[in-house]
Length: 147
View (cartoon, rainbow, N blue to C red):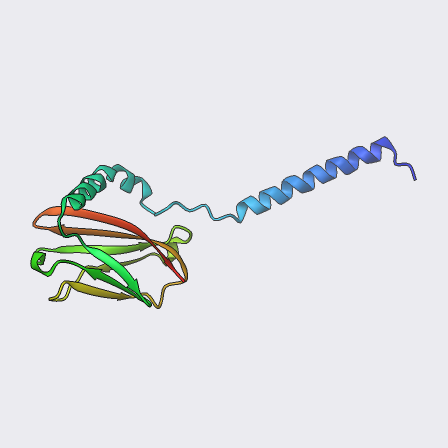
């Protein structure tokens, strides 16, 4: 069976239109949200984050963390604890911002804080610890992989 050149052009044109429509539908279903809702404001405050990281690097005793089971344990030198210490621990999920969680820093008298991670979905989280002690800001960042 031999196909006429006019039919070939129509088939080619219909195939092209079907391809374009498919690409438009697929591109409209892709999640294209920003890293965070206030991404641009955070970008402008990036120098503050750099300064806080440098402050943290100068410390003899910084906040340390470890994961034991499904518990995230923050550890701070108890001798450096004072009533002015405040801050937050932010668990940032790069692939899905709806799973981000933030907790206030509340050390016990021994300088420990336990955050239960049982409600977290499995995957990679960035841990961002911001704290202020004696009017000096500090920042520490790391990555954890929950399995």
